[in-house]
Length: 86
Length: 199
Image 1 (cartoon, one colour):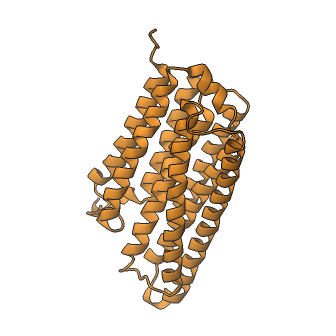
Image 2 (cartoon, helix red, strand yellow):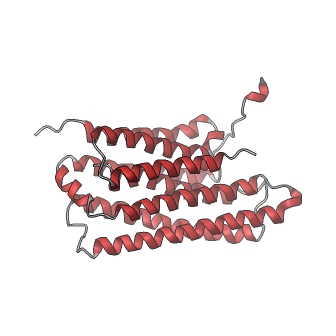
Image 3 (cartoon, one colour):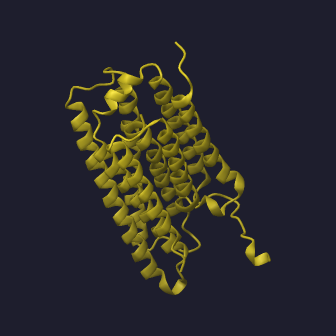
């Protein structure tokens, strides 16, 4: 029997522990912000695909939360990376 | 070759109305996330200093709790979807047990978040303290209310599942409530690094 849900839970937990460890030990720099946003995307997409079950439905329904996640995280990245003009 | 192609479901799980609600909620929270991220640009030092006043451990614990509760709910749906006519009682009992775990987890989230609110508001912090805390309070209180509603929905699902109210061919209500709960988890997955971690 496939253990997809268990694997997804382990991945989500490991990425969460990793993000927390970086933040708690004050190791978040501008490079790692991008990396953390990528891991957030992986976590979000895993929930959308496997917990919400959108992996098995028509692409258009899967694309809506995919674009929500991708656009939101991209704009957050832009807010952190775009130079600030006085 | 045809066996390798997966037949896709024509509609997302649960009632379609819940997906309209989910899309609206996602958009609303996205605006708050972006409001937070772009407001930070006007005073990065203040945002970073304010973030240090938060209890990162409680945010971390709550992330683990929500991820795990979402897993429990997914297991409950899986139990019902894969049940056979001969094993309705066992499958319903298993699904109800998963839902009970999810309800307990939701209760854990609410307790940890309440303690976090006591910690923050105990420092005299209000919506007017600064922009960081304005967004922090708006985002987390709004999300807290969603967890509260989600807990109520999970309890209703639990009672119906325990009474063997769902079958392999009729479990739309369960999928509807489950989809809402996964949305609550998804929102926190973005909220946690944004508010508690990245700086």
